[in-house]
Amino acid sequence: MFEIKKHKILSPGISLYEVYAPRVANTAEPGQFVIVRIHEKGERIPLTICDYNREAGTVSIVVQAVGRSTFQMVKLEKGDNFLDFAGPLGQPSELIEESDEELKNKKILFIGGGVGAAPVYPQIKWLSDKGIKADMILGARSKEQLILKEDIKKTTNNLWLCTNDGSKGETGFVTDVMRRLKQSNEMNYDLIVVIGPMIMMKSVSELSLEYGIKTIASLNTLMVDGTGMCGACRVTVGNETKFTCVDGPEFNAHLVDFNEAMRRQMIFKTEEGKDLLKTQKETEEHNCSCQQA
Image (cartoon, rainbow, N blue to C red; front, side):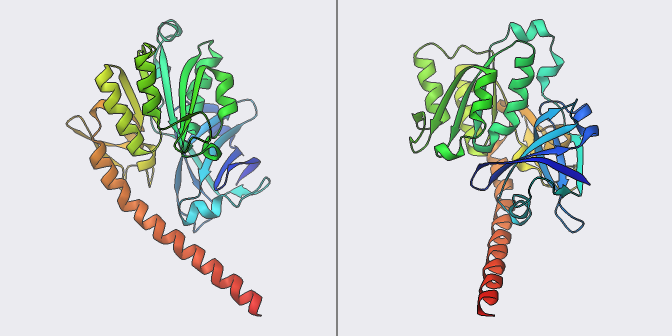
């Protein structure tokens, strides 16, 4: 069993959990993920590592309620336990392969959308611990969904916020901020790392290709089983078929077939949506019967 040491609600339906998992914390690297299961009959949920503390033996994950299992998961509190917390899995960020000198000479822009801020954070924190401050654009639908912004602000050089509804920061999409930076000659980066909704990553990739900036995208939202056995996370990168959970989750964004990835993602989102509606209906019927009794 893996005890929850801390539970923080980041926004409605989105929770951060700090879990005691010393073996995972001891070997985790930025960009990797874990497989989490609540109980014996629970679904295996792949979740990107948000943070880790080797000394405390803890690993942080961010959970958004989108289906039956994650809907149950965000109800857990401090002191509760996960049955399984396996990892670290997947390939770490390619940044860890570079020397400190190479990193210091590279100008990096991170772009996070919604809960994509969670897997971005360990990378910018890892760089910050080396004395390297990257820039970041953090976008969401509304200010309530701009998660981890205070933590990110401490570890970045420049942080630009934007929301679709204009409730916080600039109004619009992350690509609007990119265009503004380009117009002011500030889009002079050697590398862009983007993590968030698939359509956002596609748009960023198309624009960064136009600007001639190498871009890495994390396809973690495609993962289902997390071991490569189910085949749900197959994606075409260049002329090759890759498995996101084994070969990734990060890939050269300019080589990813995002249209194929989005079609595959929608298949499972539809099933998750149906399952969530079924869960909510069962809960409502149970509450109704209790009130009548």
